[in-house]
Image 1 (spheres, protein in one colour):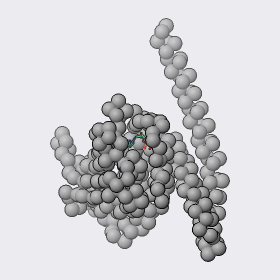
Image 2: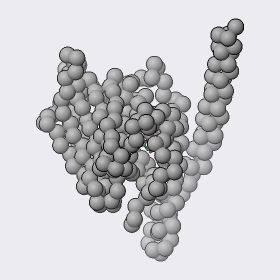
Image 3: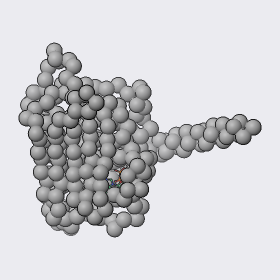
Image 4: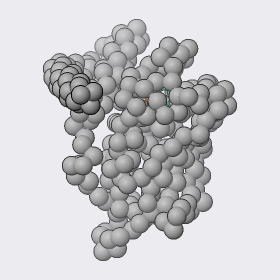
Length: 284
Ligand code: ADP
């Protein structure tokens, strides 16, 4: 009897969650069109009226643009959160040097670290390692870890990215680590932050905003890549997020992504970073 009631309750709850998700998706879709129009108008003003803008107007425009990026980030995250089904996701694999790719991503976000006077370092114990990887997923994951690292690290401190090989249970892996010297995460919140809308502190001493969807998406995307994500952290000292991916280069006939194609990809990273880092407030 009790089991039957419990089953009914679960089904009811599932229906409710589905309805909430559908409503959220509907609202997000409705937000997308006006947002695209505002973004287009900002671009037009920047291109066509650049010389006519006073410093004050330029600052206002910057604020408008920054806030549209924040909305775009939320819209993208909610859409991905509803759209990405790990069982059905179609990976778009490219054969690429993971060290070079990671370095490009880190280079494209250096400007945000500099704005907070954060020293950003990149270090790899391997000179190159070719993997079959979905660049879009990898970029989403690494950008999220990097933006969090910069978001939660005070001015003047450092963020270090390290890449090294890791053998585990007879498997060859590569580990990409993002280590910050920020506020840290309490032990009892280390699992919560990977949950939907999970935040270690809902009202922190805000130098940034957030919705708590980012790391949930990271966890989903990493599982699609057959990888693992974990965190070690000490409050007041900092956090280290480790992304572990299988280091298997199965399709040796597939052409390697060349430097020219990488440069094109770098332009995309820069555009994606503008959106990913829009939650952080800078002193200047
Ligand atoms: P958001 O940063 O947008 O709130 P995330 O899902 O990316 O969402 O992160 C969830 C929560 O995890 C954050 O709200 C924060 O409390 C905590 N967190 C994530 N990364 C870090 C970090 N590097 N240092 C300290 N806390 C972090």
